Length: 439
Image 1 (tube, rainbow, N blue to C red):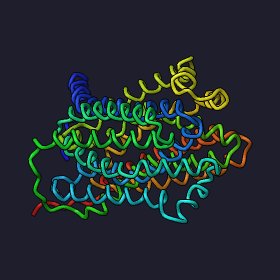
Image 2: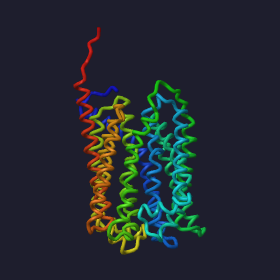
Image 3: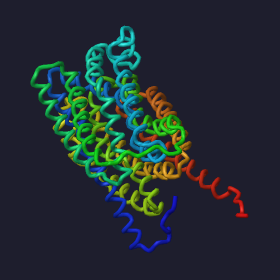
Image 4: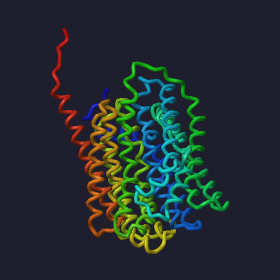
């Protein structure tokens, strides 16, 4: 990889920051709209019959869906990193296979006798939520294939530096999701199915538009690529890390004090935090593509610093003002008891989006460098920290919302430190590597 001179004058650096922003902002705008999808669906679900139970079931179902979708979500950075070596057709076949495997992974715990009854109990869900949870999983059953196809095409568009269709596609998805959620609510279907049916329909609407937008991109023939499965597994490990907190925190919630109130309010709190996290989903892919196009690591650092400061200021504005109560109790219609519990601990989550930005920069450097071994190592650190902190906190008298918030923040700090350490170690190896003079 070549890079612009890191001692470039400030005017040149700011021009680079603007170029990077132009590549990232369309993906962020699209993801920002997408981040509102779950809060909108949760707000509609909370207003159905048995709204509180349906909201808790939706949160538990989403925690499983996020984990199942991890290999599909990894297809965007995988496509950016491997397109030249693997070719577009092979990556498309990988996307289809990944999506179908995800569909099967949802159907097994939702419908297979024995597993469908044991899985909710394994998560620790109260018995009154078991049926609603299974309905929710069934309503998600087709979503992984749509997600895999759209993430593959996200990667194609990012690699071609043509990211505007991503924002348009996300707008279409939000509209479809909202309309279907309202239709399911009015049709009188089970409340637990409202969120899943709507979110799946929105994902398919987005995938259909992206398929049309990507037709203008010529097929890329395969080159001398590396082992695709190894690269996919490495990148999936980091995406799984992004998604696994929702499932692990669900288990923490069910085993902590005030479990029922925590289960009800946590999907809304996590949805609020996602408004800051989801726009950063492609920061590593866009940053890696920028670096591969002769971008400067120093420009990426400056861009990340500005982004982190903005996220911290926005999080403080929401957490420390009446905006938080309006969102939780007003917009999301959470009952007073769970709402008050969530609002007492919402400030703990304020640093999470900023940590995502810092982590996105470090991951971009790793992906652009081509040595992705640091990614699964950092993922292990995050996972161990999340589980360890979560289990330790359940032994205290803290409510579930507090345990989940504290363990999530601690795990992100640990992973960020692991990524920085891995990056520094790799740079040291590169500096110390012997060089051979030309004959």
